[in-house]
Amino acid sequence: MTVKQPQISVNKLAEYMVSKAARQRKLLRDRKYPDEDFQIGMFHREASEAIASYLANGALSTEPIDAQIQILKQQSPVKIGTQRRLASNIEAMDRFLEMLDDIDFGDADVEHGQHAPPKLVYHGVEVSVRPQIILRGTRKGKKLVGAVKIHFAKGFTMDKDTAGYVSAAVQEHCLRHIAKDDEAVFADYCSVIDVGSGQVFPGVKSTKARLKDIEDTCENIKDIWPNI
Picture 1 (cartoon, rainbow, N blue to C red):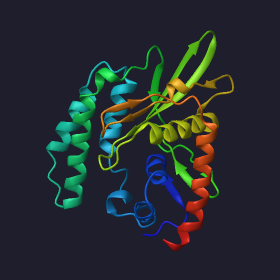
Picture 2: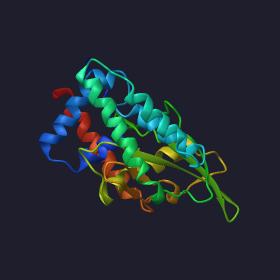
Picture 3: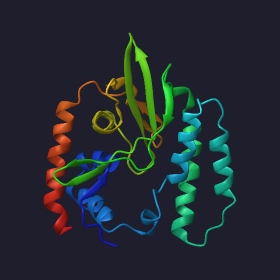
């Protein structure tokens, strides 16, 4: 399978922006020629859905996560790739359960993110943001909205810079595709949860320069994509 339209997830884009050339080419190659696991859905689909259900239900009971872990443990897939994917999902959920004390959305109302939301597009490159959780609240009579992005992969852990790019993209996504006419995007609601490193990064206040970096990177991706 070959993906003709240049596209990348926001988490992979953040990794791309801080990686060396060889890693950058591999990231694009993996996206242009996705393997079977990618074709059947997100690699951490089960973990993402279970964690989103836990958070959207008020973070009162870990039952959605506990139940999903048990379901995956009872499966016996034949393909090695599927075995690894399910094991990675179980590990991600176990790690998330160790982070519960670090996650606090205050008095915000929590809801599920869209299953297939619109993408951000820069220079023809589609950036999939797809936040798992939407937050809404009111401060001083002003209606606010934001979204939370979760990063699962252990191979690349977020830091302040990469999480900042993700948070900026999430805020732009909220501005374009989530915020209602009477809502303002609130940076504090746009945090990044990196399950791999066990860290929660707050939403960034400054997004203009970061979004410009994202746009410039996408222009480079557009030029490189045909030759990958």
